[in-house]
Image 1 (tube, one colour):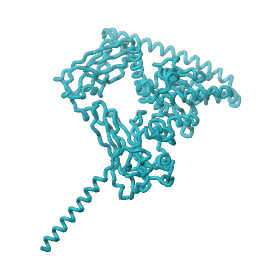
Image 2 (cartoon, helix red, strand yellow; image 1 turned 90 degrees about the vertical axis):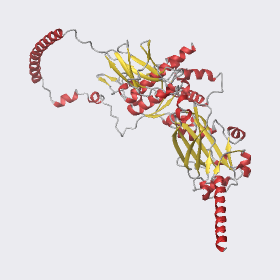
Image 3 (tube, one colour; image 1 turned 45 degrees about the vertical axis):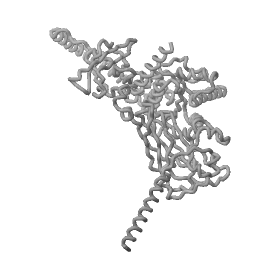
Image 4 (cartoon, one colour; image 1 turned 120 degrees about the horizontal axis):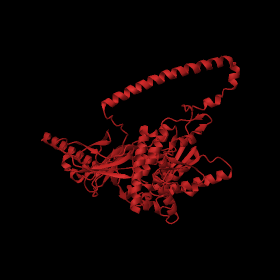
Length: 587
């Protein structure tokens, strides 16, 4: 009986421990609640972990609101919680840990959705007051933010570091795109750069989310290889998977004012993974921008560039070749003999004259122009600080124009010895300072400011007076350009140098796209004026008496030989095609 009682006591104790762990496990997961700032400040138990929306921010008069959430800058703790009890915001919490991404169901097949989860750090957890989550597509300008607060009377211990906090779903994320999510515990110190954790991830591809059968339109050839065969071009590309049942493709090339359209029907008995087709009647010496895609409605197209080179024609007969070689050899031998005789006679005459008119070294030194010889070489060593350049542009011309600006910045920094500052590269600094504050600081720090002018920039300037409810990013760009114009007018009035400010257009834009406020700035057309831009940035003249500055691979025809230059050329071609199609639609 005693053994039976002992066994039952052990079983009951084990059951009790299991129930405790089970109940504790349910409490370890914390999902956001809908509650107000007032409820958080009062410390109600119903507001332990609350989402803060844009409406909550607008209702608080002490918060300087700009959408969304002040440019995602970590807000001071006292903005929300420190009015009544300032001691809550005197400490900070270490960065969260164990960030996980969970994909959510989304009814829209063209987008993805995720939820972020994490654990708080045990260091400083007793001062934890909330979290801020930021999501950004790498290479893009879109930033999504979520803000969560804990109520004032909440008391946490290091044991609570095992809690798992969840965000709200992030929706409308592009498929097969790389994102970075940043989780920050609040409050944070003034210098908060080491007090956050980030995680990079890819959203699901269309087949992963929707299944292969529903993703035919999203498939496109990723491998394209081009070869020239005399005056024809051979193009090889990868075929769609067999279960897509795509049997027809098409190719369209535009160049020299003409368009070449080709229907493609592969023979799957020869090769089921790749196919090669031939392009006829292309003009030699012409650059073509081509597209290839599956021949189905709304299929995604792959863009590539073809350069048709000149090919020398073969001789008509072998006899003609032999006779031509004999004649050429005879003439070459005769010219060599004549040249040798003339050289000997001239050399002897000059040698006699040099003996008669020999000058002392000190006299020769007086006539030797050292400065002229030294100017032929511009040394840019590691001890020379590269010029700092701020690039401003309008994103209203679409992603193709933005890609051109991005590739130009990469080329300038890699091959033109320039330190480039671009908003697409400095997201964290912009998050900290705000987009306008960042532009103002960079304008004062940089040696030069380059404004990329375009049709969208000029159109936005015209619409600003008519419609004030514009995109905040575009308003910031126009405000920055207005400040540049005012600064140029002030500099001109003081009689100072205006070389700090430059305006440029690409070949798909027109000089009339340059706003009147930039009329005093130096103007360049890219990529034709790359040597002039180099001369401007490094303050070296291109031409002097007897001297011509030649910078390797920066000429109009030479820059595309570099990988970064080829990427810039391809981006310009794609932007030109997109803008020309948009102009046709407007007509």
